[in-house]
Image 1 (cartoon, rainbow, N blue to C red):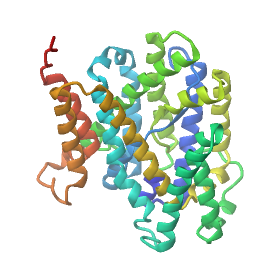
Image 2 (image 1 turned 60 degrees about the vertical axis):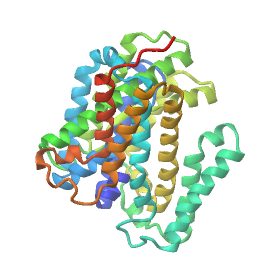
Image 3 (image 1 turned 90 degrees about the horizontal axis):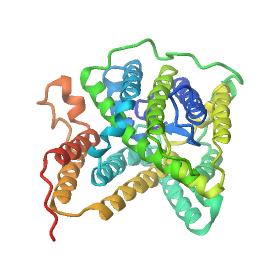
Image 4 (image 1 turned 30 degrees about the horizontal axis):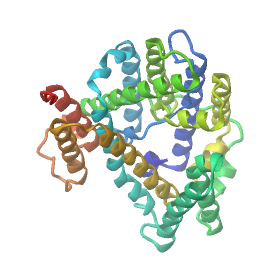
Length: 396
């Protein structure tokens, strides 16, 4: 939805993107739970889209087209699949201080996108009282539901707020249901709906590959956490299978016009909350996602979510992501070296995000897309500094 709004895609194209994503999520979830050969962790892990790809995808879409953006995801997914046997050995390059900085950069870096969507940027309702009121309503609803409810309802606070916002927007005549009525009941998603494979450019492809590398690290942590909570050994083959599944699932999703996938950290919370850790239940959920993708009216209904409703939820969600990063940094920053890594990575990442237009025009076009992405450059800075800076000796 965010990528579709930022690229101002037609309604039919957004429906294709949602349907393609559900196909990828469904297939990836079933493989994750049941396994196919060495692919999949065989754990109750649900696959979903990952927000770190938003910036590079939008940039590639604007410069080279949507087909090129999907090509970059397919190539990146296959590369992630190829390096899956090595990812366990590379975990030492991502200590907690780097992981926390990465998460903080993602949350704060995407905040600009959240406020653009919330205020209705590039829509007729930009900055209007109703638009701003709906965005504020979403924030208030999430706070109230998360603070004054318990259990299942609290876990669904974001979703519940979006449903209320959807209904309020409908009451004010902000939704055009004619597009839902025109959508067929049953249709198979088309492969490569935006055209064939198109070269995305070296800079854009490198940015996507870096995002996939960061995803691999998060997937490793999710897999180990889910293994612990369901009481199975956290062997290396599970991590390899989870990372390989992320790559293949992302390539399948992109081939049908959808987004890159990752295993969701929320799996840990949902299993704890419901007490249901059966991978066969999760596999059934994946099958349900595929069935929904075959009903275009579902995707068309989702595509109608108004910008302020989506944006208000995004502001809270990205803020929650940033708070997780802050918590990890706070618990793991031990010396001046750690503080320097965080400071420089944030300075580079956030500095690029707020830089004035044209600030990087002097950089050659081939790598400009890469170097002007604050999240990617901030992550790279933290990773490189962690490798090259000498560790301080512990005091007795």
